[in-house]
Image (cartoon, rainbow, N blue to C red; front, side):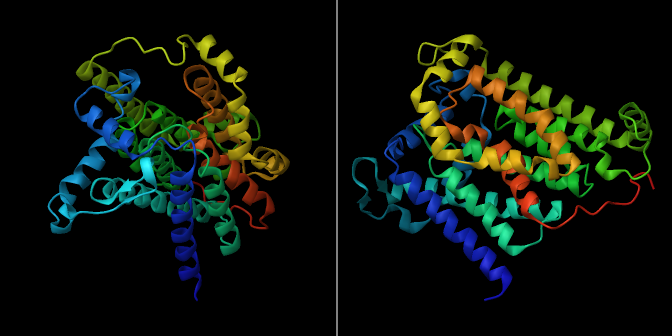
Length: 355
């Protein structure tokens, strides 16, 4: 079998593996909840209205697929129910499964493309990368529906990083536009522009000082600043527009938590937080730290620009035992950093971007 066949075969098998592991996980919420939450979103009655109701991209993506599905002749056939109470009624649930499978497949494929753009071309390392991602993903569905918005968010971030590594700056505002309709944490995408703007990896002739790099890069890369400003305007416009359209009620209390300190202390005090982090991450952070000195500059800068703030926001406003919330940092920095560390490849320095 050729390399392409091995790669796509691996992605296909790992997609199926993640789906089966998540559906059989004892913490899986079940398909009835999936269908109910989808309908609640369409009816503008999402359980946690602020912020769930603003995350409409995945809802309307699924609804578009369902509209196509309803036109197919076989979808009305009587079908068996698998897996018992939380099981699969094919005529009702199969469209949701197909969308999730498609998103997982795309996520794995884009993860491979991202590694390619970084300069990691070894087929073994690529398969190792998606294998590590799959083992991270299977326990990440803790107490949730399909969480399609989380996977779509990771896809948008991968597209953004691939575009930036390709010097395709013009795609970032469009990616930001769609991502802002998906999850509010897409606001980090414009910040990635600054990472590539100031990162010395892409400039061979800059002065050696940090301030020199900044001021010279502004001259060389005015288009990156323009792209950054435009992307920020788009994100803020969508963020405010959604809240004007749907309203802006106070966030509901979750497990008795309301304030930043409530969530932060609650997350730290929950035994399931540590159990889930061990299930999902195992030794990934330790290996990433071990190989950190070998990371390329843009990966180091991106990590420090994004990951600490990502952790603080989610510890202070989310339920961090739901480890899928950290799919973006894991797929952008942790696993690529590990693969870079064990790879003998070097990032190819591009020509002067101003030329």
